[in-house]
Length: 119
Figure 1 (cartoon, helix red, strand yellow):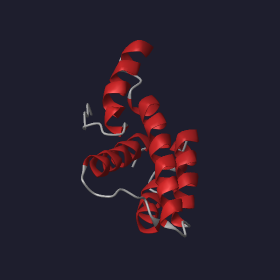
Figure 2 (cartoon, rainbow, N blue to C red):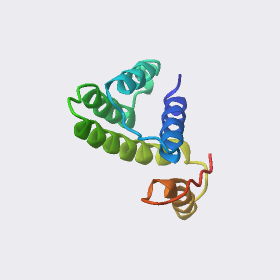
Figure 3 (tube, one colour):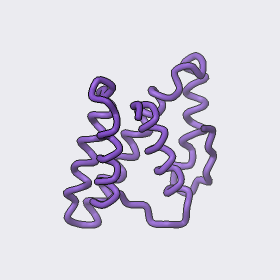
Figure 4 (cartoon, rainbow, N blue to C red):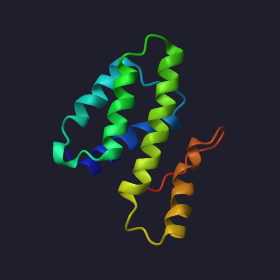
């Protein structure tokens, strides 16, 4: 799995969970699954973004309370959104075009918003 494929995979998981009517928390079991997928990315492709995600996910594995798991989930979602914009969209156009596309793409993360995906 390439780093780009990993971010597509994780972003898709986050979007589907966030769009559903389920309580979305990355607890220890889900975090271990994410870590196993990170391990599929060759070491030479593990850039700064992937290292940051791995660190946050390792914290989620150790979450002792639901509140901590929720906090780690928010941090992971935010970090993936930042990396996803830069890893996935570099050919989408100029900075203004990418900003508009990312605003549309990430609108579903705003409180009370409905899903609006562009992948």
